[in-house]
Length: 277
Image (cartoon, rainbow, N blue to C red):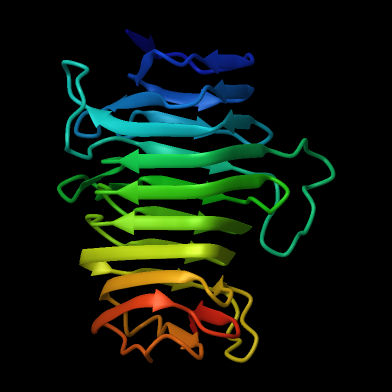
């Protein structure tokens, strides 16, 4: 049974197992959204006619409580479709990358899930004025007290697969496959991957990373992989302009804007991936 969601979620709400939910508008979440295990959520494609993009936008101080939840794109007949042309998911916290606790003047956000699995989210319209780019999953201004999602996957994104901005967060697993644009984009953020990182991209760069600090020896913006982390990277490394580097005992030295491949577990010691500009 399909149930349509077209209004902002302003009261505590539960999406029940056994139903498929369809997001048909840009929906803001300002309360607690509980999603029961194995719920499927479809997002109606629309960015050709609506620059906001249908999707879920979790506002600062909102909550998500879920086990495993699946997100897919759908067409006008509200059936699942393998085309990404929507607004995707956005999670807004209340703190930035340097702050270790949520801002004192705001109730912290709380995003908790075992697995968030996304397919064909986001969208890109190069003919727009200006060019319209809506990323599949965006995480902004979150710290580790607010972000408690164990595993996130973003496959076949319509723009960047995962964008992390002004955040300090961690995952057990982060998986990206075949986005239209970049795989993992980080902006002034630190990201720890505890158990597994997979990024496969045959369109653009594996990583798109920026920082406002030029610190090569001890960068404030990085992706950190502990020892014995499963890593699968296949695609073009990163742009020459960003000069993304690696400190590692395991991964091969990358050449910016060149093909890169690694599929193995990291050995002893930490691995850091970071921009130098």
